[in-house]
Image (cartoon, rainbow, N blue to C red):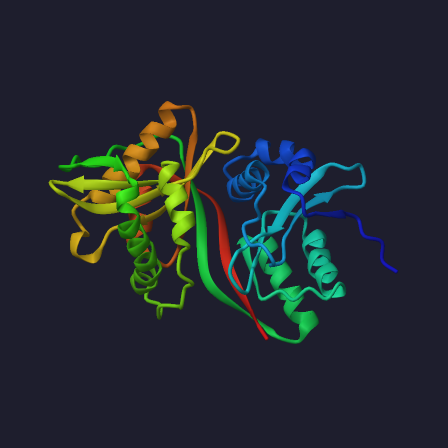
Length: 296
């Protein structure tokens, strides 16, 4: 039997995972921002992102026990896709084979290329099915802000009275993003009002106000190992093209940089509007990623 050159360590406890992989996450906090922020949030609250669904964190170890990759399965909605960060190709193949051996169905893989594609393709091969690209994505980081053209208005934190508006715009965000990218809108599960309300209380959603009304929504995550991820970013169709999104994202980035954090965000590579906006602000690409579905 072929010897496995990398050891795969699955952990259900996010605190235990952070104890093992924290140094790896901290060494590249922008690349690892999604895994780190979710693990830290679950460890702090003691609550899983998706109770009753597949749930684990994974660290990849060399024979000398050095961590050389991480992945997780914490997605709250079917098909509960894996989230995979860069790892050696043999480890990505072994991850797919390990899940197959233990009978864990995998309906999707998101994350960094080529690791995510290797996991998805090996999973599909073992199951006799196919892989489809749902969305090509890209991770960006901003190191130096290029200020946009000033526009009237101001950025204000969403308040409990704004929860219904935030919920509505979050629901519209995914549909409109698909349309902007030229895709047929895909069904999305509704956002949990309690979760959105808690994020509003925590200062995670911001509105750009013009005069007496809000015209734009930007989200921001808690700082994790020095990185702060921005998103979602949404302007209703009737208010687009007026610079609200650039102004809001620029102000959130300015605050992050002033506080010593590293702003980052994900884009849909097929959406030319958002990609142009972010590169104009000074965002630079970090790694190409993809959301992949596995047909069964």
